[in-house]
Image 1 (cartoon, rainbow, N blue to C red):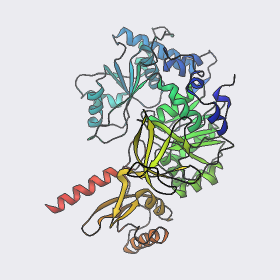
Image 2 (cartoon, rainbow, N blue to C red):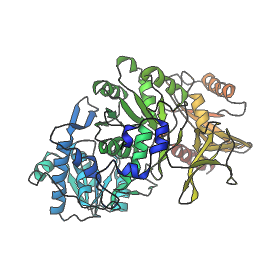
Image 3 (cartoon, helix red, strand yellow):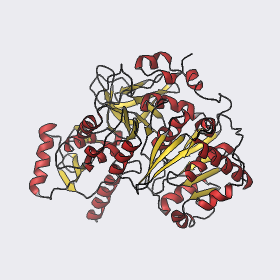
Image 4 (cartoon, helix red, strand yellow):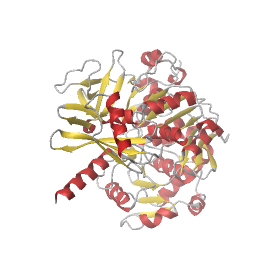
Length: 521
């Protein structure tokens, strides 16, 4: 019987995708499953085949085989046992992609401990909040971050260096896993500020199976692909879609380590002959802004993106550079991926800017405030049918006559001015069409007459002037409507972003509120 990985068409996904068909892709079953075995152990056949390619920011390339990661993670699992770590204990690690990162990630999960990946750019406050929340028995990091981590009371800090690899080398290179499918495997923190700690999303080993819907139909990954995801594996997209999903299918994946650089990424795409990339919208935008795409030759056949919608200017760059459609996949760390564009499906038409259609088996609807379904073209709240009821995604959307979904911003990014409802995303996309605008963010700010008015924050290389401000206002008004334009414009050197690369509008709103409060005193 054919496996799901052998089907690529949209019609086949609707006909054959099922929970049972997903389980047939794995060694484990509904009772016993281990992520480390499924992603690494069963593919370690002694051939030295590459599991992960790492493009380092300094220009170095690093290749790690399934065999190397399997042996190292098994030794680390034995080391954890020898150090008294029990199933259910949390093991936090704050590391860039590297052999120690994958050894720790998969070694902890083999023992039944819970892996907690943490972003390497966390400062003391951000790190302390997460450590205080998950209470790990060990925090494993590099020498640079060990000093910061050592300031947090109650946690044992281990430096993952050559010394640690030498220490675990005395243990056996194989380990028998005994986890159940419903045992906890990963605590995943969503991106947030140091003042607001998002609750950790707790994933079981079984989550790997559910993930494959997003992998097969969101990123389109299949055996034979040369895959790459530049998102940090400390976050949901980089870990689940960029690391675990391709490895579970035996696909070599690629990642980025160090400070992101768009030119370095494009060189890796060329040198590794990458055929399938899944990235954040910001990554594509930065590649366009670099002006260097013409220096490289690409082998791309499938592209996907997540995190936020891509503006039309960047979509045009993708079309002329890679010559394949950019396929959005929409979801959150909490609900997973629910809307996809089926990359590689010859019978699925990708509509530019669309979120696509639901993952097989899921039901989504755009609703009016009274809970009824909106008509095509009408913006409403995007709802997911789950646990026998409608649950909010906290996002706005609309559908078209063909059943494609379109993002209309976060529910809290709606701006209501003098009775008019406006989308921050739509205004941003219009501003980004201006040739002198590199980046743009839009929020609503209080106004005594209109309730709220639009304020935009612009990153540009063009000198600031009153004429430029008026030009941007008129540029937007002429393309949207007479009321839909930024009445206030502020030029900034950079925009605040979440660690996952999304524009952090809440930071801008908080800054405006603080400035307004200060001026009132």
